Amino acid sequence: MKKALAFDIGGTKIYYTVINELGEVVSEIVKNSTPKTLEEIVRILRNGISEYSDVDAVAIATAGAVNNENTRVISSTGNLPEGYREIDFQNLTNKKVFVENDANAAAWAEFKIGSSKNCPNSIMLTLGTGVGGGIILNNKLFKGKSGAAGEMHFKMYPDKRRKCTCGSWDCFEAYASGTGLKITAEEISDNKQITTYDVIDGWKRGCPEMTKIFNTWQNHIIQGVIGLANIFDPDCFVLSGSMAEFVDVEKIQNDVNDEIVTTPTIVRKGSAGNYSGMIGAALLALESINK
Amino acid sequence: MKKALAFDIGGTKIYYTVINELGEVVSEIVKNSTPKTLEEIVRILRNGISEYSDVDAVAIATAGAVNNENTRVISSTGNLPEGYREIDFQNLTNKKVFVENDANAAAWAEFKIGSSKNCPNSIMLTLGTGVGGGIILNNKLFKGKSGAAGEMHFKMYPDKRRKCTCGSWDCFEAYASGTGLKITAEEISDNKQITTYDVIDGWKRGCPEMTKIFNTWQNHIIQGVIGLANIFDPDCFVLSGSMAEFVDVEKIQNDVNDEIVTTPTIVRKGSAGNYSGMIGAALLALESINK
Image (spheres, chains in turn cyan, green):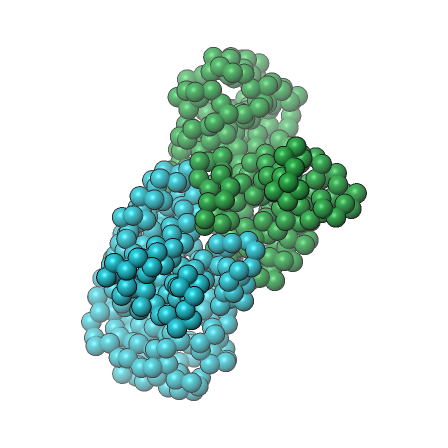
């Protein structure tokens, strides 16, 4: 069975491991913090590549948008060193290198081995510090004209209330992310020191104020999913990422289906696990060499 | 050259004519007001079918969502008589009958002979009394799991301000439509009697208050397009419908491109004309019999 060396390159960590055609992790997961310089990032990549020389392809799940040819990063990636998108990953090895955006790769893993298996049309939302998105349409990853589709930066308000990390205002990410939950908590509690943990902890203990904050945050997710459901008429939504742990998918699904004009959809938590970015990138890479 | 008899069935009028494979209208346009009963609608359809018996297919652009097999209407259509979606159009003729949602059909006409020609990924927004949507992805009409994709009912606010015709709250349609402009005008001018015409007329004459109302309305369109551009990374947007006449597409395009995280997109007015629904449905019908 063919296998790929898969990297997950994010703003805080770089992981790598080997993954087979079934999406199974077949070696240890090597974990590094993301270094500050380009040279050190390249050194980690080279280390992995020389360590696992018996693979059939190299797969890279990365922060940032990736072009439709899956050869390079085309957007700026705030948390990675300047020049990151100038790296020509193919120069690092003679094996076929396949690059994909991390949220897109994770969506593909959910589609192949996880919660959106057998759903021709699905939307994955990664709820973490920010919000990532991956869109599968007609059983294919949808990338748009340049590879940047799936950015969950649609507006929750039209009138400039909350700045988003993207430079614009009031994007879904600015409300539905963990960071969004903290800002909503600051606004409702009038306490700048409040943390996401405080809200989750208080909500779990049944504190009315923290429950109100939590519900406001979850309602933002529901309102966003309603819009996406009407636009895409998808078979299902997959919610993954560290913040997805806390949401009530049954309530989200019911509330969404009560309001949409399209036929009912399904909302599930992700099940492809923490390494779904690497798994999805590896599966895409192995499919591309099998073509 | 093959040709199709095409109907456009809407809440206020039913048109029909004959259209050839080039998307050209090749007979007169027969115009009827939409009757109140199912029987009278069927009579108009039968009249057209017997009048033009030399066509190769019958194409129907209709209000309401249409299934992915293009055989029947699957959603309720508020402005058409009860039971409309029970009509089996194929029973009316021995020719192949092809049914498509009117906004989807119009989007296809723009893609084949109009403003989104040569754009593999485009989104058409029909700005009229309501807002219609049609989505072309990878050179194909995108319909979602059941045929209902492209409903432009995503939220402009998450907190229930303005009721939408769909039964939900604060959808793009409730702000970006002609009806939305009137409600925005009522709110800003505190005058329930104000009409869409008053706003357009005052804005054209440079009245500051009407210009403020107009700009608020156009800003809702811009905010919606920003979200769709980030989600889809499309080659272009096409704005059509009676209200599109008034918008400043250059300003919309510039404002959108200033804010999106994806690569720049194009915003154009539709150019396939008032009969784009019939043209698109006819082209789709003729393509389907040529397969």
